[in-house]
Length: 400
Image 1 (cartoon, one colour):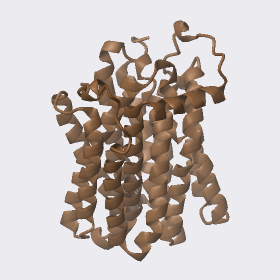
Image 2 (cartoon, one colour; image 1 turned 60 degrees about the horizontal axis):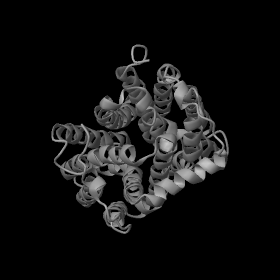
Image 3 (tube, helix red, strand yellow; image 1 turned 90 degrees about the vertical axis):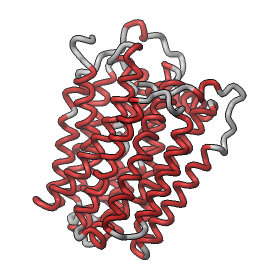
Image 4 (cartoon, one colour; image 1 turned 120 degrees about the horizontal axis):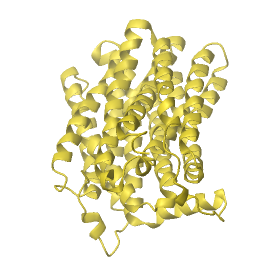
């Protein structure tokens, strides 16, 4: 298995899928804005394609945990997502807008396959001894995708038009198909009889997430943080148009955050015992809150600094989230816990986009201030759930 499918092959596929995912959001917003002239409709498309992940993630994870060839299921999800992007683009301005949003909602159902669905397969790609390093590298693919995706969407929109940016994002998702199909099959020893139904497994997965305080705390904080991140994303078109001199440049601001996220994760990987992952979760939310306050200045230089600071909070927070999930998730529910967590984050992001779009139309500074307040709430939410009496697991350092 290791000779046919290496970690390097896995990472190539993960980067392609996630870059396409990261590009699709800004590309849809830019295409919606260009073709309809409405910022509200543009943000509605992004909200539609992300909000349905809450339904798709848990079910997809359960099916992945049961599948003998999970790679085939991931490949099917990638096809649905890529075809859906093309259908949305074809429908803008040609179909009633409500129908186009409905297509976006359906397209977003398999979106967790591009994030948590891949990560849950790592234990079958690398041996146990290599999992900590692989986990860190996998987390960094999100940073790489966040860097390449928005930059590609914004650059393509500037040079070739917003519609072409959507096509490029769909093509990137399609490039990940071969590596998804090649993912190793589940070992025979894992093919144990399953008496529980799919619904029973869904309930069991949610019980683990809500019943284990470390998992519940990081899940709640990461989801609320995603709401704040979605609010910022909804503001990027406005920031680009009014502060940076072009709507496409606003999408490229997200790439600046990805650069600092990659650097922060690289530094953290060099000093893996410096901070516990649970502490990084809530501290990262506070760093993001400070960045959003700085972005509200609406000054070009300060805005660039703000998104760089934002990445310093986002990158390590994501790596820490993966570390806690791998540490706390039972093997037979790992896929569901990762995809459910991803779907909750995506849904939180969608709610942030939907909430910030109308507010930003009224007041851009007000929308950014609201996003900063939500990020503070994310940090406070970590402490709402009491820790267990035995906190030794929370004191474990980040893997490297």
